[in-house]
Image 1 (cartoon, rainbow, N blue to C red):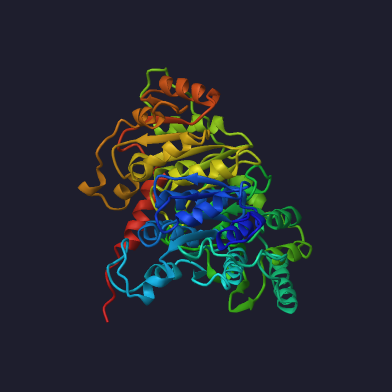
Image 2: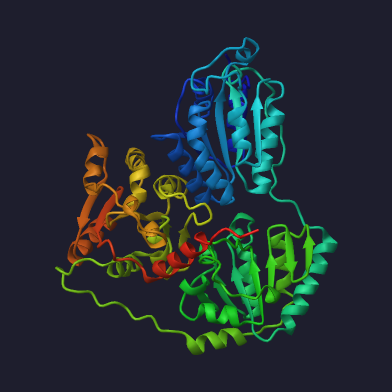
Length: 563
């Protein structure tokens, strides 16, 4: 077949290239092999082969975070798709436009009432698509090559417009079928605001904020997904307001900015930050997501009557909502309407606590979490990206002071442990000029450890810290039990297994401050991936995790209401 002929598979490859995808993640299976052949013919796209579908989905998650654009992951029908499902649900929760592509059954199978392998053994061919429909903005099945261009374009447009994943299932005998060549078109992002609604929302917000005595700005997680980070920065510059970040929005606002107070996380936030936010007479939350995790079990104390919420597509005031107002446009228009007011910032500076640098112990001193993170702080550069796994790494990571330009990634809304190993792979592929620093607890690492072999396979260079404290620390602090203890591994030795004969990974085990210093020095200079296993006492965790765990455990443990 001439390479000038467009097939369904090559059409999809062209569209992915057109929207900026340069790499896609995947695991082969008999239902997607012909589709992968078609993809591989596009030499401008590179396939990254992963160990399993769940990790491939996490990698696509990390890639979308790194590039700020869409990503793609390819799996086989049913057995592969359902393994991928959890990662796609996480991408949905985190507003990431991941394009999940699955091979599908032959179009003749349903007409012939054929019971298929990799399925539930019943004559139902639609259940994978129906399951993905719950965790995507669009889930489609392509069985007619004539319809494929419209279906593919619609799915891609939906992913970009709503910043959510989509699912595309392509029948295995359709992937190489001839279809229309791609036509010129635009895949724009979110639509524009309604002009009248935008004008009224800006006027009302400006009126209230300009009348406030101690107004405060708080950045939220939706700022990145809806391309509003720069507009929020301009708003902070123009207004002079004190600025805080919600925990899942860390690094979305420059932490070296003179107006920055720290993380607003209720009782476990930055010292002094919560007091200023909660005593303000008016707070503008830009792109917030209020959950039990991001509010420390709903322990934050901002009065809803003193809050303006600028959401992705609306602005919510106490008692009034303006719909079809886009976040970036609202912040941009509001910035020029505000009078400078630094009253809250001045109040924060009066109570601001000076951070006291830890003094290192002698080299033989047993390693503590505080000393570990003091050294990670020293490793950070403008090109660093920290990926913090669900658990104690959240709380220690939140206390890192990020240089201008550095980034910080968590999966706080979905909180699927093990996410960070695959995400580190995807982030490393998507941002080759950055060196990710991954902070992973031993319990989480055991879920997805095999993807370190893929990191080695493709010559990536993250530095991975595995905190070996013998269990699920975050679960211990929410509700302890024997199920929180895990089988110990020799984590550092795994790198030798994954290296085999051709890998360039290296690893270290550190139980003392001196061993950690030597490991970090070697890691920074190594031209390849590094895993550092740090031995931490089981009870050595961030004090904020203890407080947060108590609040979340209390929230989880509320008795049922009597009728």
